[in-house]
Image 1 (cartoon, one colour):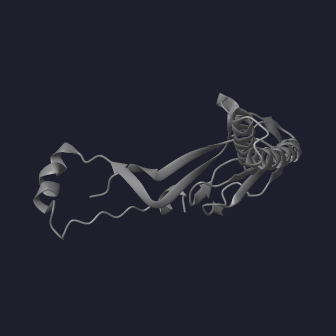
Image 2: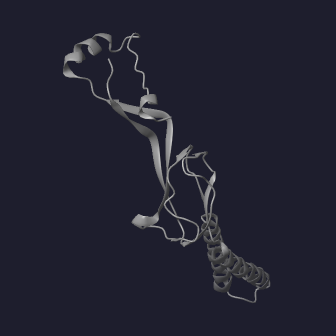
Length: 181
């Protein structure tokens, strides 16, 4: 039987920015096969690097203050509350460093799956922001395996049922006539 059908990707991911900023690099060509982890876009990292550097400086001060408070507590010259406040400040500043590092890492937009990149939706110089409908930068389709949907004419159903579940039923998808590869 020859039937007409449509092919659908096994996986489709719409890649979006997770931080705001200006696109400073596009690192793929439309239609290119990409691997999971390949760099797709770069967002200007400078503001995020500055935030990370600032958070690291605050953490360093908090760590030094905590050491002083621990020394003074061992000598019995400060209240326990002062030491607990210093510990809390150090923990908060560590969390701020971790968050700033995550945001800096998000300036490098990488492919989440193996697949084929579609048409890019933004160019170098565009500003992007997370959470907007226009934030889709590119769509990646995993085409291996690929699904094929087709319908069978009602008069042919008994023939298909006769072979269904047996080793003689084979389905061949041929996209060559459609100009696909």
